[in-house]
Length: 447
Image 1 (cartoon, rainbow, N blue to C red):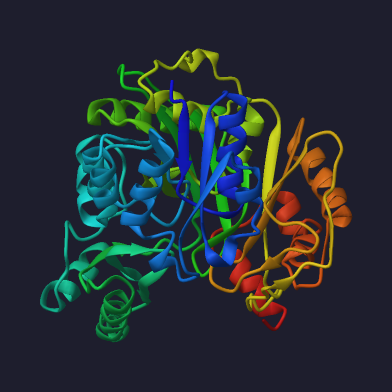
Image 2: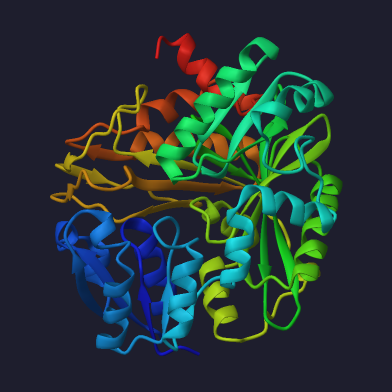
């Protein structure tokens, strides 16, 4: 097992990894920008190294500085968290070239799943169901023919895309040319790559994802599904485990498909296979080759520490889990508490004047903020994650309602009022929503 791990991230996820390491008796190294010198992950790590100025490109994305920090401190492995360099194949290669361990999948698998066309072709060959669409890059000349073949509406997506950028819908033939042009322009600006592909646009799908763990000894297990259908601009805001839409048989079936596919692939580490789900059918959208923001809801219903498993797998240890060992108990929901206006989602960095976290049975709050901390304007606006777990979904919703009413983050605007409304909404209580529900709900409120 590793003796010292460097965490190449910040905020709540850096703190989450530090906690897992401490419980495993592993020393930790935090990196930080000059803007994060007073951050909680810096305070709680055993050592810390400043890697650059506030701009992420000069600090948290500065590969040379991060490798140097490992060499200075004697760290043997790097945990990338999520975001930043977590799905950067070049970084994974560089880590390996320097004799260090990247706590994640191989660079080849990161590269494979990072390109949406390659990922779709790969999983299709592995037996995972995909959305009908183009077999690869789509040109303006062939777009109309492909669209007619799969039927309108269609979705144009950037091959290098993520986070909803480079995605446009064409409802009919008259909108196709403009949608293609918009998607290419947006993709070029966001990713430096204007290649796009086309898929059938599903009308009212849910977003279902399967959590996978795979070790270097050929063992692959799934930890069930998460329902991440409450989204704004393709960004998740509320996640559940399990999904109100699935039954145990559907969970077993899609979980089995995913584990068999990643067994064939020889995958290593934690990964999440994401699907759109409509009318009882699953359609692959992408695979995330990293830890997910929403991993705590899976931990809540399985009792498995996913970060601990990531570290053990990276060290070469065999998982001491079999699929039969994994039991799903109760229901869990996570709300992403962002430093944003609750309805317009305008960023709200600034000084936190009051801070009180909810407590009690089945309540967890993953965060790196504290009273007197100033949220910097340079990074993601996630301030914390409220996770509740209970015996069933109804009890979970009631516990979440109580926990949200207890949570206090003063001095800045947060999305707490949004969730206080959602947890009382009849559609949410009934589990009757799709990936389009939240945007329509906000539009109905005039936002």
